[in-house]
Image 1 (cartoon, rainbow, N blue to C red):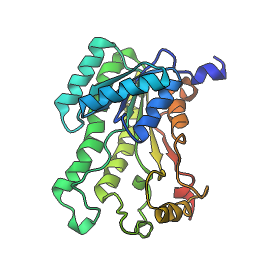
Image 2: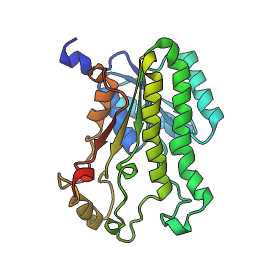
Image 3: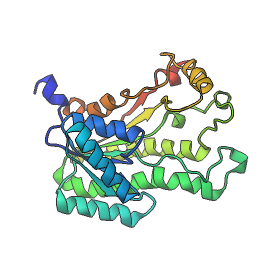
Length: 264
């Protein structure tokens, strides 16, 4: 296999949880541009279907939207039953969904069990459930690829001085959930390796979106590259890990942060 073929995802079927916004959109774009058919999920069925149709037109690719709520086991199980019935296999699973919760305030002493669970359930428990269902589907096939999207917040303590008002950092529950995803990656990679299923993790740093300029400047100064992540900085990483070019890589946490975690 030549190097171009090794990066191709032609004929592969991928699923990206939370594929309708932010990192999810970039991941879907990268996988589709590499030749994969893509399923995107959202807890909002209409949103998933509409975004899939929009992306299909934009990327000239086969993209399907399906509803799934990571906080409900039955929703996850039902989705994988549908995938098995309609497609038979799923070559690539990207556990991207989870994200934020309005129930969390970002201040440790004010957090509640409810706000803690609002992060743990979709980010960590949901990832465990999708991984379990994927394993049940693909272990008999003795092939597959799982990519979990964690965060550098799981690796280093967050410098609150960067987050001047009105910015508020994610709460400790977010960091704990993402750290759990990295641990889940390592152990499921060991468990599933003999079945030919690779499991890796990507930990992005801060990406520039609509934050105040003061925050962007302060954060950028703490990176080696002196900037936050930009659109396009993640998609190549995902395509690489999903492709045959990474056939001998599993149980790895790939950090995409412009050197933030190494710059002291």
